[in-house]
Image (cartoon, rainbow, N blue to C red; front, top):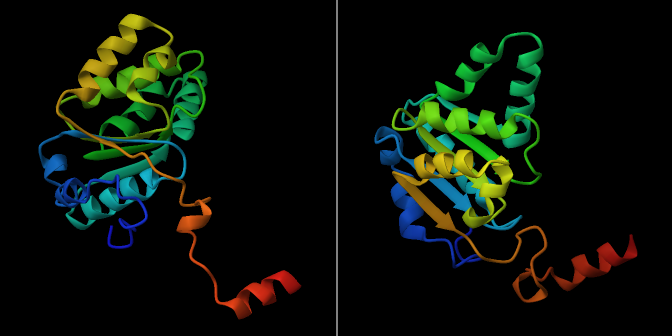
Length: 189
């Protein structure tokens, strides 16, 4: 968290991030959604919150949404679904990165709902979606399932919406200019 560049992205609510960094949300079993386009620092903030929670002695699991849903899909084949589901429902803080990069297929909407349902008011969850919250319902493929999941997820939650340029590809005005010698050396390569 100490390395996050708040000056690059002034839409990040620094006071709220610092408050979340106390990990009180983990103890209160609340959720954190860090919403915004690619490259704005969502994963960095989620990992920083996870690191703070680890330092505070909490069990934390960080996983990409794709990997989590792939593991659950595979667990159906070898009848280890319930055991595998426990991996994602028992940590004190579960961080799911990059939800919504691709549509959910097959039973993935049901799996996501089941994780949200089982963690509701029992454990904290942090999700970094690449879609606005109003774009989530179609991901589930079922309006009722989506409504129920979103109701539980948003209850007792902190939503940080980040709207900014990408750190990876900032506009020219935000790029740090290298010294002239470094520019010449880079151009010579």
